[in-house]
Amino acid sequence: MTLTQDSLQRSLPLPSEMTNVDMDSSGGNEEALMKTVTRTGAVVPRKRAAGRLIMHSMAMFGREFCYAVEAAFVTPVLLSVGLPKNLYSLVWLISPILGFVLQPVVGSASDHCTCSWGRRRPFIVGLGIIMLLGMALYLNGDMLISAFIDQRDKQRTWAIVTTMLGVVLFDFAADFIDGPIKAYLFDVCSHQDKERGLHYHALFTGLGGALGYLTGAMDWVIAVLGFSLASEFQMIFLLAALVFLICLTLHLHSIPEVPLRYENEEKKLLLEMTKSYKYSSIDEDIRNGCLKPAFTEIEAEAAPGKCADTSRREEPRRITLKSLLRTLLNMPPHYRYLCVSHLFGWMAFLSNMLFFTDFMGQVVYQGSPYAPHNSTLYLTYRTGVEMGCWGLCINAISSSLYSYLQKFLLPYIGLKGLYFTGYLLFGLGTGLIGLFPYLYSTLALCSLFGVMSSTLYTVPFHLIAEYHREEESLKLENWEPSEEYERGKGIDCAALTCMVQLAQIILGVGLGLLVSVAGSVVTVISASMVALIGSCFVAFCVRYVD
Image (cartoon, rainbow, N blue to C red; front, side, top):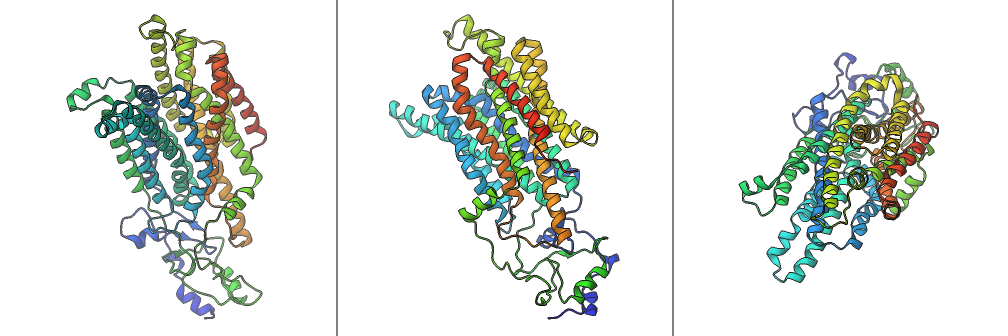
């Protein structure tokens, strides 16, 4: 049909009647689907309540709690099942290799998912189930195998296989789940709420890590006897699984998602006339014979040569390897520079954190893990390892506190200042620990680890949100249509998260050899050097939106 000015004005609501629809309400699917839409089709979510953002952040709390539990117990578990030393590197390399290869695929798949429950939440649920399965296998694998296999030799072999499989599955899912969670936040929040949400994410990440490390420091023997369980690992699994399930449930019910819809389906969205686009601008479109809103229930006949065909996309886009590679290769340069800076940050952070407890035991306490287990050297080493766990707890607490302070610092020093400060303080702190490996100074400087942790979890994703906001504004001004292989938030978050796996691969291949040659002190020195190089890269190569 051809639109006339009278029919258009009768179909549009009066400006006084136009209101935003709160997606947080629970009045049914129709209300959940309705967002504010500008006349270009850009979705403008309304302001989210702090409680909703806190619920959304609980997934990061549960994930980091389980991560800290793994860090505290996975080495004792692997030793208890008799894993050969030459298989340690294999355990830690399989998961990051899988993550580095498959992360962009999952990100792109979530961008184009047409599930009625939303684009991100189906992937979050699936990865959460894999996390629970992996945790169950590596904490209870020995007991499960003993229940089904009687022969002692086969028990040991299958217990090793089951435990390794559990560690790989848990690390794989725990690394993967961060990307869909961040993309979920970006999809359902306005720009201001994205900033608040990222700060809440970092805050609860630190709190979850702190409680997880404290869980590892507790004596669970009394609790095991009280619940008549076979081992402390079963008690830990029950606690961690309960915490994660509660946090995941709160996260999934925090903010409803709008399912991905296409132009051949009925759109249940509101048409909002913004201040910059009054009815006079629509009159111009009518005079030209077409109307350009992407999401309205009014169809306009396109005048030849005057407007684009709005029925171009009638079916969901299929994800192919060619389209995925094209999307990644055509990523703008400032996205690639951000990924490189993220790689520097995670290489520095992980090279320190993976060997920090060993550094405390061997360098600070002057113990030896290779001495007889009843010797003074070995007991001294164990004391240093326990003190190192308290240092990691300090790191997690300081990460939460700094996440809270970031929102006060941001107006004064900006994203560039926050990014540069995080890398610089971490580089100086680890350098001082390497030069002066004393107990109290080392524990005090552990607080700078939290500054780096909070920076890595917030600032790069904040920049991604800024880049997308800028691109959407440019498209809005220039009336640019969506490209055939449009890059979504999911694949950008996945590309950024891939740098964590790439850092693990690089460190797993190279740092272990350096430690065996030069000792644990090389880890903090290398972390300091990489962080200082990264701070220069952050200052001069990363692009910041004015």
